[in-house]
Length: 122
Length: 110
Image (tube, rainbow over the protein chains, first blue to last red):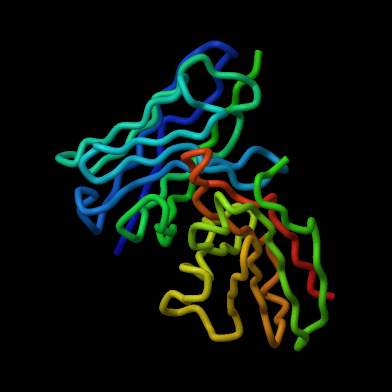
């Protein structure tokens, strides 16, 4: 069974950093591109970042570019999101998502984690 | 303001047909496939349609999708009370070099 379990969320102050992890089980992440998607309280879904199987292609939403860094460790079957210079507007549930499809342009999201909450507040 | 435009809400009665619209541009819907997701608060979103009109296994044929130009739509026929949720469309945007979601449409089953 495919499982994605996020961890690392919590309460931080504006300007601080946080690192999210996503532990995958039931499949080798080396065979899949992965994404982070977030949902702020009362708001809709927002795509955050994409990383290809070998990390050769990485994309970010404009709202996080330059502050967030996605990475993966295929040997540990894990995905990460390093979040620096956090802002109040980064407060959201962050979902780890497995891509289905060959390219970022044509993929879709079949498997989602349950999410981890990041709260940025002074 | 979301890049893809969805109406904030739709409603229907059990057994009815409802349609969700999703409007974009040539750089996103006009160039790339659309997928649709159903999301209940507190749960993981579920894919209903991918590649504009394909259903993953396990999704009933009450759900169907289509795309024309820079717009896409999701239809639900035979509406059921358990369909009540938020529905999102998404597509890759070649200009933004990223994926964009619609703002979501809340379905209320009356």
